[in-house]
Amino acid sequence: MGERSINIRLNRALGQNFLKSAKISRRIVESASLDPSLTIVEIGVGSGSLTSILLELGYTVIGFEIDTRFVEGNKRLEGEKFTLRYEDFLKADLSSLPETAAYVANIPYYITSPIIERIMFEGPDFVKAVLMVQKEYADRLIATPRTKEYGILTVNVNTFARVSELFQVSRKEFIPQPEVDSMVIELSLLDEPPIDRERRDAYRGFVRQCFSQRRKKLKNNLKGLVDSPESLLKASEIGLDARAEELDVEDFVRLFRNIYPNVV
Image (cartoon, rainbow, N blue to C red; front, side, top):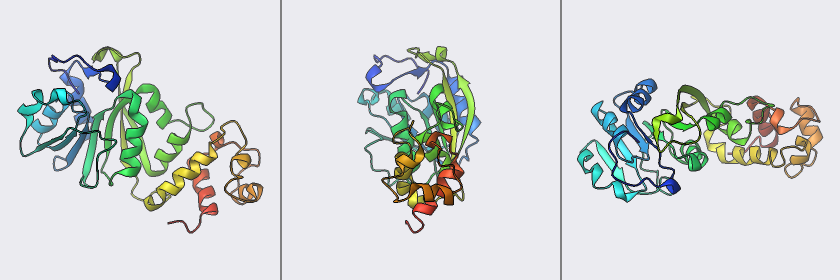
């Protein structure tokens, strides 16, 4: 989203916060070091300021925007290198997106998790995703075990991708000004994740079960999955009194493999 003069009353229900300056939008693109031959999928085109920079730099862009009030203003961007789909990204058919695409988005805070989960686990493979998210949300993605930020999302994303924080953006850079700062992050799929991507749904369900009662010991949360949680934990070299929040990604992967050795 961007810095152009906006004659539309921004919709707080849609989480619309536009950047004041084109400098931030340009920095997002430049910091990602994206190959000019890539197709960029932009989620939340808004007034088209970030789109304009992407097109200026020669990228092919597929944009998603749920607010049809921007139709008229974005007609100036129409052309062979830009396709704009006025539909909800969370409900859209993503099967037609190229696997050589990269994502760029200033994500509305209130649907950050669903969008990242859609990108990571429901859409086709991608080169990288460069996303502006709430700073506290970025902290969850890079959190370490035994911290309050560490949880299901941390484990699932870091099992399949490398997460990097690129730069922080002050809340003062937005209209209207949100209550928190933002962080531009980069997600890059691992070439050889410890769990095959074909098994990602089973793995996600397993991690969710492990965290189902966060304060309980892991052996209690595993009772619905295995007959003898204690034996499983011993075989996986994990303490009997351990809680899910204390395990790192390698621990979850080892447990999953021991429970579901033949899941495809």
